Image 1 (cartoon, rainbow, N blue to C red):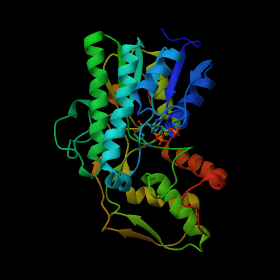
Image 2: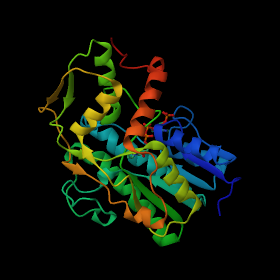
Image 3: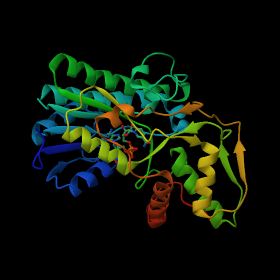
Length: 319
Ligand SMILES: NC(=O)c1ccc[n+]([C@@H]2O[C@H](COP(=O)([O-])OP(=O)(O)OC[C@H]3O[C@@H](n4cnc5c(N)ncnc54)[C@H](OP(=O)(O)O)[C@@H]3O)[C@@H](O)[C@H]2O)c1
């Protein structure tokens, strides 16, 4: 059983999701949360991961470490997205299992589901069709992570569980236009254009695909829920169960930021999957539901962006 003294290792605790999990656990009185940056512990190195787990003896491992990025990054670095993600998760899962860690929470992604799977996406659609080609490398790595945890659960009766978040956004997001996801990229573009006399904003694709977005603190609460309860199955979707078109999202963000210029859709750039909405009834049925609505979440994220503009190291803001 997990209690407030349990040693909880969050792999990737400096990332957007890992840091939200850390904040949430600390706020709830957990006393022994541990983590190591990629400089201190490169999770691609099996022996180093083994030594770290041996030394720190965690009761639980939460795997929020991964090489993460948008369409552009996935397209440019397929090998890294496949191999580094498999190395990171294999080392964590396997060493956790070998060294007697009984509880493991693996974070995957909604891109594990087939490109043309029926919507909303149910957990049972896993491995029923071809993947979206723009991020199949990342998706394949994540699928092997889900299956590794499922196999340990099945064969050794351990509480290894996988949570599949929808698109996440929020504080500590990545606003670097070379590697960011759609929401932070839009926030940055509209902000810069507003600073630049409401210049035209060029956005990728046709704007017609539909997407679902979950505020990262809600994701962290889902992880804490999985930590405090033994979930009955191996795989759970985590999202809001509601989606909107990318055009509708752009209009919402534009309004919140106060940009009054034109939006141009660059349809020479890929759209990705036409729709990606999670069926979250499995999580709802066991007692978790999101709390932050999209409008509130965007406002919170934009506030954090404004407070932290000075800290962005790469891709310096213009205007
Ligand atoms: N963001 C989303 O929209 C989204 C959606 C669905 C699923 N997820 C999943 O949620 C998890 C966390 O994502 P995120 O958005 O928080 O990503 P993030 O902000 O990029 O954080 C990833 C973390 O992984 C760590 N990491 C990467 N490579 C490492 C290595 N070789 N050794 C040690 N640590 C390494 C990084 O550590 P350092 O900072 O110390 O370098 C970083 O803190 C991932 O599994 C991702 O697939 C995210």
